[in-house]
Length: 427
Ligand SMILES: Cc1cc2nc3c(=O)[nH]c(=O)nc-3n(C[C@H](O)[C@H](O)[C@H](O)COP(=O)(O)OP(=O)(O)OC[C@H]3O[C@@H](n4cnc5c(N)ncnc54)[C@H](O)[C@@H]3O)c2cc1C
Image (cartoon, rainbow, N blue to C red; front, top):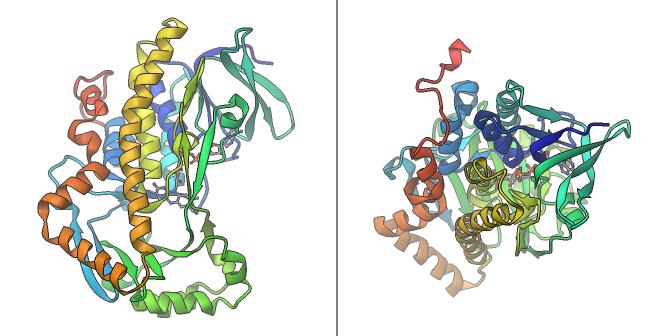
């Protein structure tokens, strides 16, 4: 039984937990990451990463650990409604150091982060290990977790601060009694991957809405030479949809993205080639309690629209690391104040993203002649106004690079980063 005490005990080795551990490793904090999965491998998880998070990853040196050919910059976005393009965004127009969102397969991202964590002797990663109970002192302060591995061996991990980074169905949230509220959105998402059409080479991502406004799809170019397609389906309709032949899905694709129909017929032959994402958003009023905090999806599950989930998970991790670095040894009250400041700062960006996603949801579900005409007019209006584009995308994609607290810490070089990070080829 381990009686080690770490600075940080991070439950969950997804984008939030592993990024926090990578920062901690670089900053000289000791940490342990406990993850229920046996490896970072998982094909169908978020891969679209918004520019602010790409910027944080570049600062951390993570992008030097992934071959450039294994990631893809997304150059723009085209939204068509009823067969006509109503909105076009070219990310190069935005004046920020990291203007483009990127597609980075999650297992590559997590493996690169894990390498950075484990090359430092101050940090450890335990896989196949699940947090099952909180350890608490007599006054109720969380002092770590009790975890169990696949052979049911139990171990105690003590820490100055325990972090619940265990995702949308967070066990840590439940164990701690931190209250949350779930808002189910009216649609789910059906995802699949297929070969990228040659004609789309290095192109933007596409959103398509049909004339009636009752079917929507997103097609995101990804690596290697693939396109990730998401189709919106009514909430809970998966079972009835799957009771039909897969040609039902081919018909929807043919209607929305006819260019993909021949390949989708060839490559998506059964429902097992698809995955469903249950879309909901979770509100947590207070993310922290004495000795513990939630970050990433555990604190604020978002919809996957516009690559917000991973990005906020990564930005949470960066800011928490910066704020906690010099305060980890302070009194419990002082640490609580730091956690409160952290939540206040991150909540601003998260609420902006959530509101935009919810507005987008209600625009997409608009039915009938006038609401759909209104939606098209709105997008066309936005398309013609550079100021509107700058405002909306500035809030969604570039808030941290523009004037966020993370920018302040990065600019004041809170910890030394190699001036010239090694090139990937030399690693
Ligand atoms: C199919 C799909 C597609 C998506 N597409 C996108 C996208 O394109 N862009 C985007 O931004 N977001 C997308 N998302 C959402 C995105 O994946 C999440 O927002 C993001 O991964 C959140 O990161 P996280 O680290 O907070 O949580 P997670 O990535 O969920 O990581 C949580 C980790 O905690 C571990 N864990 C859970 N319970 C325990 C426990 N008791 N003990 C130990 N470990 C535990 C899990 O094994 C997991 O590794 C998608 C999600 C899915 C499912």
